[in-house]
Length: 224
Ligand code: C5P
Image (cartoon, rainbow, N blue to C red; front, side, top):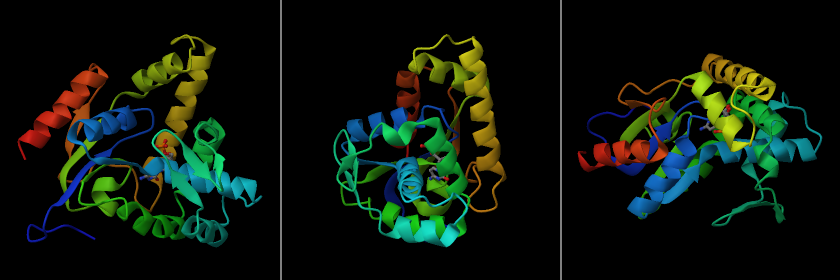
């Protein structure tokens, strides 16, 4: 679906970008400041990957995984996520589940299964949504579209620091390799590849703090 100038804008701020770009933190803070709901769409792909793992379904079984995605028994709470009544908030954040999410996210039937579920997050309160295709596919009529990025090296350093590791040791090299691998997979897939929407504003956060990034998004929002 492509937005035209005749379609009404949706009360949605779409923030897309590569992994570890800080988009989740920025999107959540913008949502809190504007008193809007927040959608972490990556969590839905991660939950689907974890659910498939629990059912011993391989990452390539497109239709079985799509069927799981349609009936994902998930509950989002303020600070936790439940899958089948079990708290999986940290279990979905492992590198293995990230890779699984990236693999199943390349399957068209899985993306189709999660499309309406993502759109259902939009209520009259408005939404800030982060992911890879929020602006291009899920909310093409978003009132503001931001593509947030940073160099792979900076993203790997931030991730290493987050995990309490040295930002230049062998752990850093492994994180950098994983980030580059996931970037490559997300950019080269045929369905909804990671790339800025034509009308997205590009925000390179390589030399910005989270606070400065949040301010920049709010500044664009105030000028809509
Ligand atoms: O953002 P996060 O790292 O949690 O996303 C996990 C994976 O899910 C990404 O690597 C990407 O392949 C996939 N994803 C996607 N579309 C989205 C959000 C996430 O393809 N809107």
